[in-house]
Length: 240
Image (cartoon, rainbow, N blue to C red; front, side, top):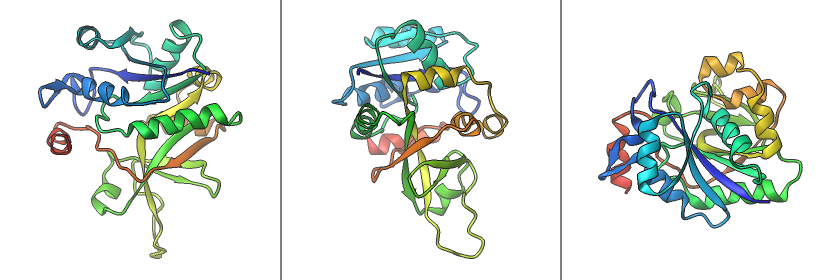
């Protein structure tokens, strides 16, 4: 079973228009992310999926695989599903890496790929990182996740969940910007209408949860600094 990593990329981000092409140390953000993924050892194919000609042309010139997708795709996963159904029919596992994750851990991507290939019952898998910083916990750009005793997601939110009313010293986890899917699950997901919770929180993974799907959470000890707003670029440059 072959694995493809697809980076969904759009130009018109509400918080940071033109983000994929924003320069970080003289390279476009999307290039940093793609180069990071090239370090993976369990991946067979890497491509960017976009509906914007500026991103398409830039990625093409950089020498990476790129696919043009319809502007009607509502989310990154919908964009990947279109790519899978039209261009990559012989791939069984797909990993969705957000284009604004230039510091994503290649070993984590490999782990998700292996997990999906070795476990027949798994449909969706993603990752989370334990956090203690109140600044991150309260930051709506840092998505939080709570999960059950078997490691399956209960809910994702931009709010600080769970709410620690009685100082129970609960643990908080930040959702990482990547997902893995089996081919069948990915294509089924794209046929489901956007859910109310998905629209409210602007989190596509809630569409799966609202429709009874199970998402396995992999805990990682290595955080990743994403680019949500222009001010995040300086943070990433310090790490680079």
